[in-house]
Image 1: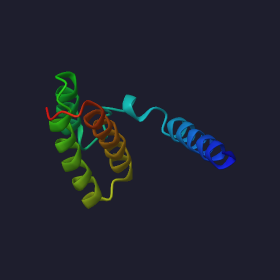
Image 2: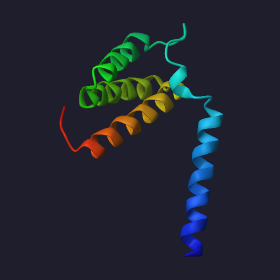
Image 3: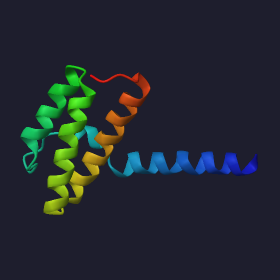
Length: 96
């Protein structure tokens, strides 16, 4: 029981640290130095239309391109969006 509690607190602390360190990466959507600005706008458009499967596909493409360019900021952003859409799809259990 103690292990579960410790593990839970560790996970919570890690999550809070990640959110604080990234200064809410979701708000860093479209700065002028964003080489993927057009793609992220498309992701947001799909998100507003509630199409997580298509948004996830586009995020995977962005992630692949960011890895090729070794762009750590875009890789992190893509990981966070991928987690978001993966979770949405798992919770809904539907293919949109």
